[in-house]
Amino acid sequence: MRLFAAVLPPPDAVSELGAAVDRLPADDGLRWTGRPGWHLTLAFYGDVPDETVPELERRLARAAARTEAFTVALRGGGQFGGRALWAGVTGDVPVLRRLAERAEAAGRKAGLPGEHRRYRPHLTLARSRAAYDFEPYVTALDGFAGQPWTVGELALVRSNLPRSDVPGEQPRYEKVGAWALTGAR
Image (cartoon, rainbow, N blue to C red; front, side, top):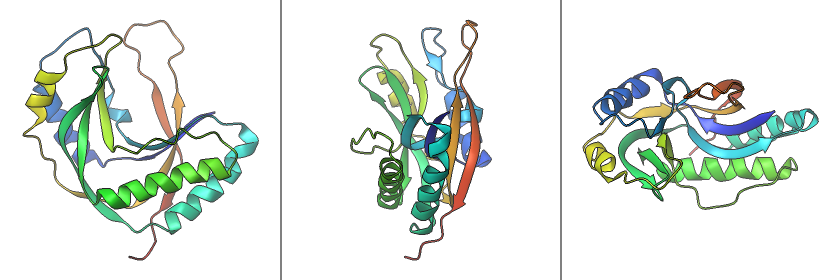
């Protein structure tokens, strides 16, 4: 099962960002991510053997129990190497980073390989197969500032990749586990 740990924004945050994205220029050369699947990835685990899932869940529960609820908001935008357009995150970003580190460590301790790169909180909006000039989109998103929300849970999400050859088909994401953030400041 293909899994990752994530923070899932509430419907209001998705609606606000969706309204900003609707104002961006359309371009058929971009693969836009589906709004039902918008998330902040904390740690990507890839294909996880079924027998490893209970240990991963146990360790994610521990990570959530050690992390306090915190406040973030979606704000502005950026790009990764001309390949991806994203919305940024503001607020209690140090706590979000700590949660990402704990989620990555949970995977490592459960026996999964880790990516181990500096965590940069973002929500991916669009991708391009070839180098793309996202600068007009980044500029258009500069003024976007969503309302803050409280992150109260850590989610384990299953990624179901498209199985057909239908152009534009999106991966489907399914929350398979969630743990309340209960740590004390």
